[in-house]
Image (cartoon, rainbow, N blue to C red):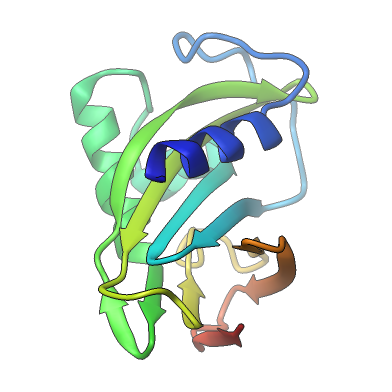
Length: 170
């Protein structure tokens, strides 16, 4: 089931143009600081694909990001510390399954695929996304949640300074 959810997220959020993870093309300047997440819940599995501007993530990590093991470890640690998920009130441990560089509308981005497993089917989901809040005072993080089966969709919005958990009940 996790592989099916991960495949769904990869296909649903892959841009028309892709590029290898290394080297990153030169970033076109952007005034928007945003991370976008597509999350799928099915049974006790929660899987998310998080997409961030690569240069913004590099500023947050204070290092260049490449496809090497050290970069992947740094990104994984950062994302699992700043993207928190609870199910039925219990905090879940995120595991980064994959990640890499890509290009979306001429902007180099970095994506990660994260999964959380709850002990029982998820009916109440709590989410806190603080990605890059410490780096940009105008950072915005959006999360599109799709509950399966039935494809019930909900949206969450987090902005810099907002550290409150947002709770969805299905």
